[in-house]
Length: 225
Image 1 (cartoon, one colour):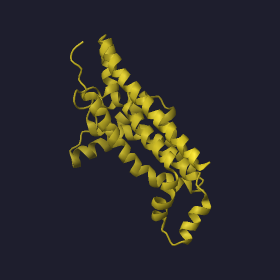
Image 2 (cartoon, rainbow, N blue to C red):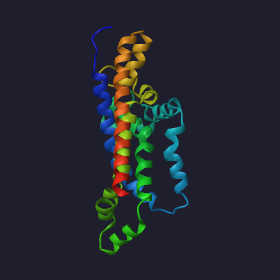
Image 3 (tube, rainbow, N blue to C red):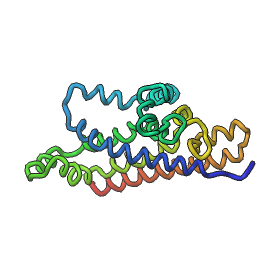
Image 4 (cartoon, rainbow, N blue to C red):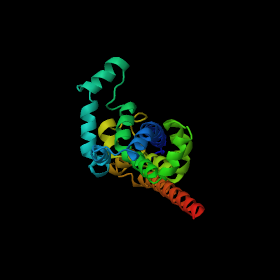
């Protein structure tokens, strides 16, 4: 076993932070809209948004890789106008992670908004508050457990990604080699001691994240009862 390089953890946390912030900005208005929508197209969007949960990462990773490749319209557009190489580069990992972790941000927020007392929202509108003010000042403060769950689980899920990030980003040290990919390579090279250390770190992080979410939700339920 050589000296442990913790750069993959830095890349994993950096990727998770970018994906979580981007998804929060995107999913907040979307989840608010669909929580209050009666559109007949709502089930179609909900089904599409949940696909990353049931699709094998290799399937999702393949289609993302194809969509972001240099020969695709999307990949060519970003390459030509922004100079971004989405495949086998960090920006591509961010895009892939946002698609893969989308339901983990969207669904808790939507469930939280749907659980709100509708009379409270109507009272806010009657009081002269706009839709944006109602969302930020009335709805969000009353779905704190859902909000915390969405943010924390999205971050943790992105840190633990493997299949999608490997297909889209490969394993370029210091660029796309995240912690989960590093563990896979250690096992391939029979460096089990390093793999144990990396895996133990991710296991501990995952446990602490879940413990934090359950403790917050339990505290919130006790406060409401």
